[in-house]
Length: 400
Image (cartoon, rainbow, N blue to C red; front, side, top):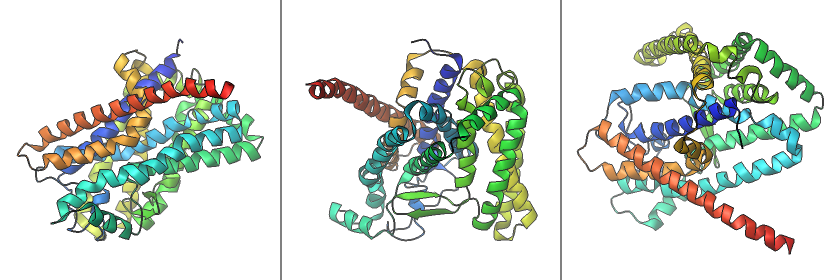
């Protein structure tokens, strides 16, 4: 089936994003600022939630790479996830869509948190315990005041956004025509839309960042998220929902639209806004808790601006140049979701195995990335092939 230029561009962008996600987690062990976890898995403040394995070999270049990804990556993921929501709601109906979301997101989330995360974090216990055992690991795991979810926090937040979108679709009938109008307006006035999205992000992000700090997380049960960012992420999810409501071929995401044509402008704005944010962040980190409130507010505003410009730059870049077909990009995009769910197991185990080697950090990290991406890609592709093989049999039995 022939795909539109926008569909190809977003598919290839999704392939890039999943590689970046795996890359970020692959280099966490080698960050210069990383603090080794305590000797016990169940000792607060649970630093292993961010950096499960901390290697003796570090490189500050990875800190800069992760800083940029932390600014925009998850917001872009929420935007891309939202692009397909409204058309799917219109096609399947509210409850059909919600049922499919619980099957596609809820079940993998439960399985990953219940099964994959204990497997992924076992190396943390092995590196901290003098006499490790499965029974000892399970005893400590059960004593934790939460069930670690790792990268799957994203799925929990995404499921809640899908649920909210379903409620709006079901109980606010006029929303359909309003979303369509907004989607058409976005296509005609992309810069106004970007300004509105950035302003909304500033309004919802800055107060929470001041109250909770930009880095504080909360964990309860199998759920976890940064206290300063859930409403910020909602802005991007629903912006993506509006962008995709009129279809992918027109409006904001048109391959010949104003967004795509001005990709170089967005490159420059993304670069300079990130430099501003990183400079203000350096000032705050050097002052610690004594950083002036005005500097903190400017830093949080710079974060929101850098996030918006980086997201828009990557969208514009792929809308302009990302309309190509390649087997590896198609396959990565097709299996991106499965890779996201399972990759963390391979990342942490690879980092743990390499801790005993004397390789430099900039050599270890590519090894971890290659092993984790390759293994999770194979697992995801194999799972999809197995599921596809089972589906005809199920249909045949049902028909009989």
